[in-house]
Amino acid sequence: MIGSGKDKGSTAASGEQSWRELAGPRKKRINSPQARKRRQQKLLKLLGLLLLVIVVVAAIVVSVSALKDRDEAIQISTPSKPIERILFETDGVLPNNWLGTVVELHAGMSLMEADIHSLKADLEAQGQVKSASVARIFPSDLKISIEERIPSLRLAVAGPNDTRLLKLVARDGTIYAGVGYPKSMLKNLPFVQPYLSSEGKYLPMRGIDRVADLLDYARQNNPKLFNTWQVVSLEHYTGDLELPGQIIEVRSTWVPRIIFSAGADYGQQLDRLSYILSYVQQRGNPSIERIDLSLRGSAAVQFSSGRVGTF
Image (cartoon, rainbow, N blue to C red; front, side):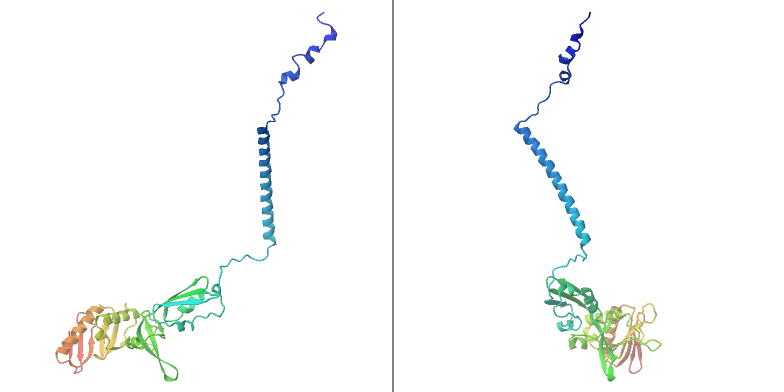
């Protein structure tokens, strides 16, 4: 027989071919101090990450809950004190006490309560003010800067009870009541006779910048002559240089009527006027009624005797 029955399976259960032997030897867990330290570090990192996630989630929940429960809006304001000083500066003649008649600021008003845009509009509504700037200077100062219009002419208007009121006319045609000007300055400004329309109405001042150019040129280049000018008549000057025949008439103590072309070169016209006055003076200074400088290339002079000369 090949083998007896009592020996069946003994070799497979306990011999070298068992499953433990086939799986190989079992690995032992390293339990050195370095290994334990590494395991502790991994555990601490895991716990830290878990704690961070919990904190972030809790913060989000609290923020959302706070925003839902909050009824009033968040207000952010700049620290502001009651206005202590108003810093006022101007390039003209307006006095400090004038400011109090225009700017309304109640006692105890804080700097942030002052409406700087409304204040600017109120200031620029005054005819003498060309432009204004209003700025807050923290913590308690309000700065107001003014650029003033410069008057070129005086205008006499009828007031109540047959009184005569004095107004001023700026280069841009603005008419205003002047404040703070010395009398000596106003005395040197000629009066203006406005343009009267065909309907018998005085139109708004137009083209005054061209009139002011004539006055400025005469003042700078021949002040002696300019000081004799008393009235500037705009009877034949609409302010529109595109229209023909636009003339500016000056009435002076030397010559009752001096006529300038509004569209021609003022330097040439004033040079011709100076020559005529010098020429007439050298010939006994006969009385002159009218000098017309508006002619092209020449001037017509009308003497009191009735004689007319061309220069």
